[in-house]
Image (cartoon, rainbow, N blue to C red; front, side, top):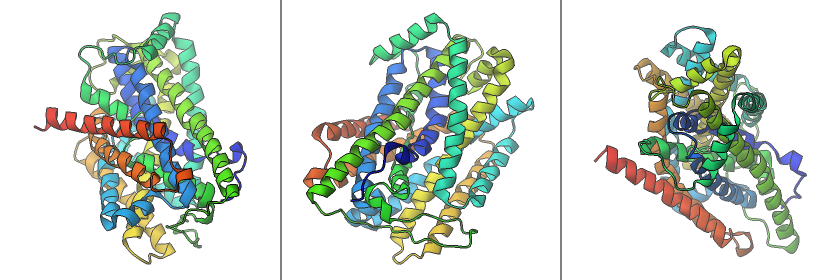
Length: 443
C-alpha cells in the first residue's frame, strides 16, 4: 500500500461526482418541489445525500484496497452476467437527456430566443466535441467540473444571500428539523426521484470507483488512464488488481488513506452538495413560492430569473453551464463504466480497444439523446423523473452487491457494522421507491 499524500493532492474525483449531482436533483427536482410545496421537505434532501456519501465511501473502499474497480470485483464473483447487467443498467436509464433539455431551455431563454430541440441537439454535439478534443479523459472531466463548480456555486450563494429574507432562512432551518414531514399533495414519484438524485444517482455513484483508481488512490496507483484515441499514444490500463499484504505498516497506511479520502469526499461531495442543494431550494422558495404560473415543468427556473431582474440572465447562464456540466459528467461516467464492463466481458482487450470502447459508448449516448429530442420528447422534468425510476432499480441492486464485495475483504479492511447498516438502509429505500412506482404507475 503506497503512502497517502496530503489532502490537497487527493481532491479531484469528488468534483466529478458532485458535478453529476448538481443537475438533476440540486438544480431541478428539489428546487421544483420547494417552489411548489415549501421548505418542509429540506430534511429529505439532506438524508438523500448523506445516504449517498456512505454508499460512495464503500465504493471507494474496494478500489482503494484492491486497485481495481467494483465492476472487476463483481465480474470475478458473479461472472459475465454482472458485466452485462451493468452495461445495460448504466446506458439505458440515461438515454433520456432530461438534464440537457433543462440546460438548453435555460440557455435559449438567456439568449432571448424560443427553446427548440435544436438547442438540445447542438449542446449534445458540443459535449462530444469537448471529450473528443481532450487528451486524457479523466483529466478532461476533472478540469471541466472544477471550472463549472467554482463559477456556479459562488454565484448561487451570492444570489441567495441577496434575495432571501429572514423569514425564508428560518423556514429553511425549520425544514431541516422536520424529519418525516411531507406536505399534502406532493407528487410522491417526483419526491422519491429527488431523493434518488440527492447527489449523483443510478450507476453514476459507481463511477467513483473508476475515478479514485485513475487518480491513484491506494492500490489504484498501479492502474493507468484512458487516452484520447486521437492523441497518438497509448497507456496500459490495468483492469484487475489485488489486495495488499496484511502487514502492520500496510494496514496503518490504509487507515491514513481511509481518513483522508473520507474527509475529501465529505468536504467536496457532502458539504458542498448540501450547501448548494439547500441554497438552491431556498432561492426557489424566496423568489417564486406560491407563484400561480409554476405548473409542473421547469418553468419555475425561468420565473426565478425573472424575479432577479438584471441578474436573471447571469443566473440562467450559470444554470445552463451547471446543467451542461452535469450532462457532460453523466455521459463521460457512463461511457467509462460501460467501457470497463465491456473490456471485462472480452478477455484480452487491448489498450486501444478500451479507448475506442469509451468513445463508442460516448457517441452512442449522444446519438440516442439526439433521437429522443428529434422524436419530440423535450420536456425536461418528465425526462428526469423517467430516468430516476430506472436508476432506482440499479441503486437498489448495487447497494447490496457492494456490501457483499466489501464484507469479503480481509477483516481489518471491512466496513464497520454501522456503515453496513446505513448502506443496507439505502438499498431498502431505493427498492421501496421502485416497488412504489411500479405499483402505482404500471399495475
